[in-house]
Length: 177
View (cartoon, rainbow, N blue to C red):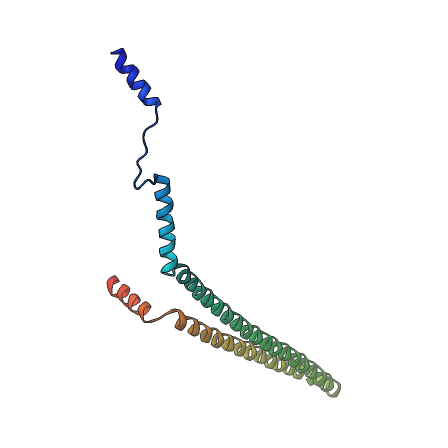
């Protein structure tokens, strides 16, 4: 029994034989297989397909960025336009208020007895005009901002929402019923 254990122990320390085909070892077959695989990839032009796909994605991203820059420029222009309108409305309001005060002073000089009632009435009218002008300017600014936002949203939704997305949405609605 000791002899068998000695044989097994000496066999475990030894090296096992590597298989070889046509005189090539396993590492040479692996290298040959890799060379053939790389050759097939080059023959089928796989790198060109990969770079073409990446170039298409880059072009799509670049187009989206250009569109975003255009939309931002339009939004900045609208913001500047409405800021100028608001500033003009404030100047007009100040001019209206100044005119109302001058008119009130002239009326005060004419008739002091009726001037208090008339001054209060004229000043209220001027403030109402100013408030109405401010409300109209703000309403116009809001309406234009809403119109611009709706147009931009419509363009973005139309671009990102195609027929397939419509079908998917309709299927989801029908499934929820």
